[in-house]
Amino acid sequence: MQPYLVFSITASLGAMGELAGHERRGSLIWPGRSAILGLLGAAMGIERGGDFSKLDALGLAVAVFDTGASLRDYHTVETVPSAAVKHPNSRPEALAAARGRTNTTITLRDYRAGPLYGIAVWGEELDAIAAALRRPRYTLYLGRKSCPLAAPPGAKVVDAVSAEEALTHLDLPPWRRLDRRGAPVAARLLVCGSEEGEIVHDIPGDRRRRHFTPRRVTVRNVEIVPGGAG
Image 1: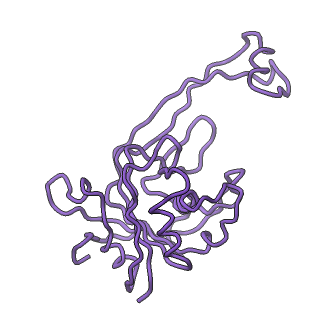
Image 2: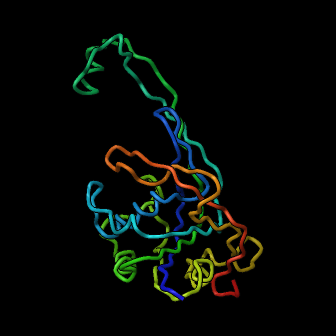
Image 3: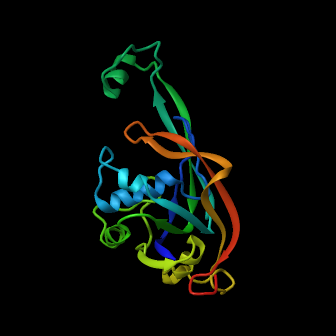
């Protein structure tokens, strides 16, 4: 047995970033390591350029209860061709210098509507992190700042033999405890770091520049029922 910090995250809209450029920013169906560590850092009041070394050392697993529905948002963006303006100091300066020689670009952002995840964390100072999640220093988001959490995470520390067992002790928001058929909600997938499995780029390398390094994860079939047999 060992201690695990467990908590849930749900939001009306969530966005779990993947490799992206300016025009397209997609969303995974579960939150990556960088998203979870960023949320913990926000709870503890750590600035983007602050010391994340203790959080970076944590182990974590994600239980997928509901991936949410896919939602895509389109934007139109006015851009200034580099041929029209060289090295502007600001966007207003570029627009003024372009004198109407601009282009319109369509960009898209993907979201997940109504997702629900359970998180298990293990390592040092779990009680302090749980306390921070209960009284967060900054607003907690699921991905982008347009995606605040829809419920308190319900963080607590439990003793268990595995992350999977620890997650059966989750306290889910009251309106997410039953599925559409009225049965206790269950997680069907568990995402864990692994020596094998698929490669994802979600380990923060340079948080200021939003650079990420790869790791391997496995996605296992499970049946985790909070308050149930697990």
